[in-house]
Length: 149
Image 1 (cartoon, rainbow, N blue to C red):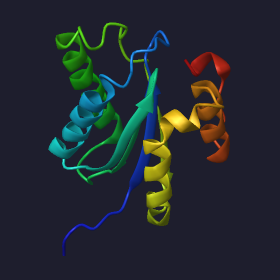
Image 2 (image 1 turned 30 degrees about the horizontal axis):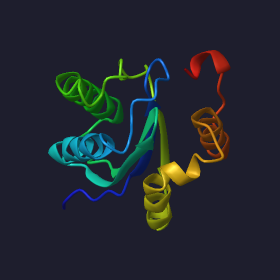
Image 3 (image 1 turned 180 degrees about the horizontal axis):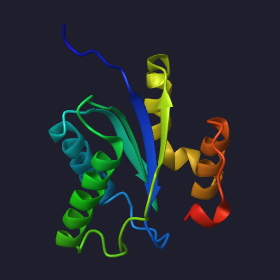
Image 4 (image 1 turned 45 degrees about the horizontal axis):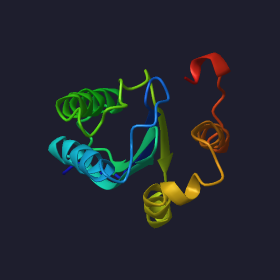
């Protein structure tokens, strides 16, 4: 018998110094690069988005991948890409340590795709910190403020 899984993750992380580095000029290339990295790791990217200082990845995790190794690889590869494209990503320093990872039922996929793709609109009224705390609370995760950033 084959291996059958459905592991829908939303992963969020930000720029280490909270610098605004994403804009209309550079975001598409970074999102496409990250989606390509997910595909190269046999994970299906449903949406890659973000706004100003942070990233959202929505994907199906392939069963041979560990989440921590996958996110490490995405951060390393995208960090290198942005350093090579310094003209487009002048305000990027590096990624924060850690990430938030949240699982969802497959029936939530379309709503989550809209959420990830609508980050600019979503953040008209909410900061990344508020969004992260909302996600942690929604998923019943206890946290210590000193480890959030």
